[in-house]
Length: 476
RNA sequence: CGGGGCGUAGCGCAGCUUGGUAGCGCACUUGCUUUGGGAGCAAGGGGUCGCAGGUUCGAAUCCUGUCGCCCCGACCA
Image (cartoon, rainbow, N blue to C red; front, side, top):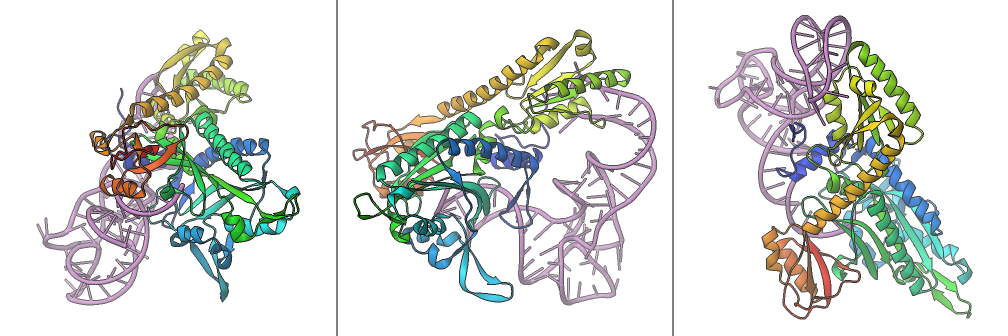
């Protein structure tokens, strides 16, 4: 392997520093002049736009519509659902002044919108004929966090939050799971991030939810990242906000609500799952630039090669997100490293030799492999290669996860792996065991994977009969 | 909120111990030569040394305070 990039700290040396280096050097973000906030630069915002587009399409296909609710929530609304307030009170930012005037009631900057949306739904819903209500919102939210990291946890972040109301518990639960399925598609098929679907234990549940479903992904340092959540809220919010409808039988009933959200944190998952010591590796489906073309040559050769490369780019630009790097001030070697750092999936090199033989040389970012393609095969070979990179990145992530997932019969076994990785074990269901585990090892219950049966080896903490098969890990 | 680290040019740093009016590398500008894995030479531009007090003839350097950022933990997408 050739010399590593000087600007990026190797993952093995210091994973956090590696992450910080990559997000900066790949031109994804800049730190904002306010603690805990970041600027998403065009390169990362474009990735977010691809995620948005794919998700939005799936939401529409499943009958949802977008709407937009206010940024500010009056205090009296925020505190209506007791558990919910308790869960969020520590991280709410408040607006107390309007111009020079002190406000009569302080206004919360939304940490999430269940309350204000619930208040509106209560007014909109009268009859069973008004149900279901299936609305999604693309928005920013604010949570006053103590420790922040770009994408993974920032004070302000972008997300979508879906809020639905249903006539029955069954329908609401089905909605909750359906949306979880969409998140899974986005993470796995679009971002190439394999996830484990499960239900949160009571201690990890969303404040005010009856049931929280989650997708957990394994990062390159062996820590878990909660990558999307979907909540069945039962009638908790319906009762707090008086969301009632008159049913067919003439009886006034409370609706059943759900909420589900996913955030720019998914970009953090993307970076950590695929990145390597040379920088970012982007799956073609979300790569702002899928193919970069680097002309090589000197003097007259260079002009001929560049002209030819420009023609090629023009020809292919309808089909691919392709860019010609004809900057004269950098050498090819510099450009190779630069685009690798930024994670571009394929690089085309065109030099005098290629020109003479009517061929192009393609380098894959995922494997580093170089392939020579005849001119008349370029278009179809490139699309195949892009698909192959997309698939390979996902497969590599699946393999990494498989080799870092361990079944354990007691929690001491986790120490053999430095508490890094996914651990599957039986759990008795007692929060005291979960607390003790966390206290001693910083490992938490990420979820109870859907469809997983207990092994019968007893709770990994107390040894009592297991009630659930659980996925344990240290988490971001 | 605890622990650690750091604030000097756009970035990375040296200078501080022992005070004397700021330097190196990269980046940037111009010119020439270069280009199949981070090019070379030459000439340039750019800094109220985080901020505020204090000590001193004189402070990047010493003292006091303060603000900010990064990392690691505890709490949360």
